[in-house]
Image (cartoon, rainbow over all chains, first blue to last red; front, side, top):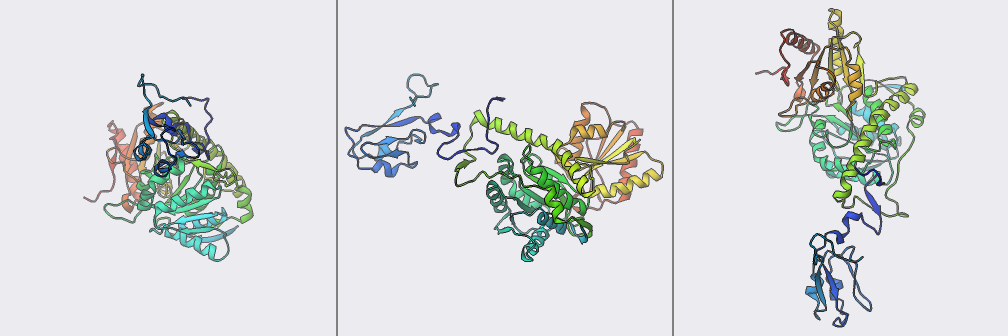
Length: 99
Length: 389
């Protein structure tokens, strides 16, 4: 039992964050990679993302805390500008990602 | 203080009024409906300022109270049997979220077959739900224990929900003289120590998904908190006795246990009958006493062990059956005694679904246990008392 942890009495987390265990990056298997040279900024990926994890402006950015890696954005992209990149590359035991 | 003729439900409503509950949610169910009726009257008469949420089910009742308790207000409900079973999922939410919801549970036998009559099986089915469980012998104890339950549940060392149990009809619909304390006395006994988790200024996500790396630690903390209720229960009892002059013994009460060779152990209304059986047997020269368990969760193991020192035989009478195992109270008592003694524990299942258990029945159980012990027979895991077949 790890006594060093200080847990809130009521299981909860400050708004805008989630408990470490619930961050999608722990178990996501793939992530969207947006090729901005192909993207025409139409915004379809933003509309179809079920988690609201994509943000658009001058470029399309994925919030990888919440992206589940479902790939709907890549499927919907008319310009084929989004490809799904596996999180597990060489070592399947390691969670990929650089954040 | 005034003396009133109150049934158990009215005593529970009076306690909730005196505790100045702020949110009540309940769904009508016999025999607990009287509690919400009583509180409706208190609210209508202007004696209590409380938001009474009328809900479509017991499940929703407790869900509403969980939301309210997260806002740091004093919450209360009443239910029994099927309603408590329907609440089951939310019982675990309330305890896991460490919310001091207090609830009156008017113990009634669970269906099937359909019944409305007294039995502890409904609450026993929730023994692992993480709620504090207290059991009452009479209507004065219902009122007093509910006031104590708010104190115990809201203590910051504990911060857990509590159910106060009393039996259908025997207590819920039977009037007794009850001393109703003055409001100022209750105010002084029961300070508000509630924490708001939902606050628009400091938004939080409640009950977020918790993975294997933290879930078990939350459960450890929850169990530790429930165990702390043992010590706090004693403190509450002392504070209550000092202010109101009634000492219910805290987690358990002994009656004529001095010099007893055999101890009857039971809970709830049967304890009142057992007092009479003990008196009768003592008059006949039998060395017998009563151990009445008030706090079933957390189970006061050290206290029970101390109280049973010197006792040679234990007789446990359960108004419940854990199918395939036996009586819940007998199981706990055996578990306590297994560490330090080879005292035989005789276990009777009695009074299920409201079957009458009178003084004569308890006297007979006493003699049955004595005879069995004299014949050198090892106690059976449990025996059913009073079958008609």
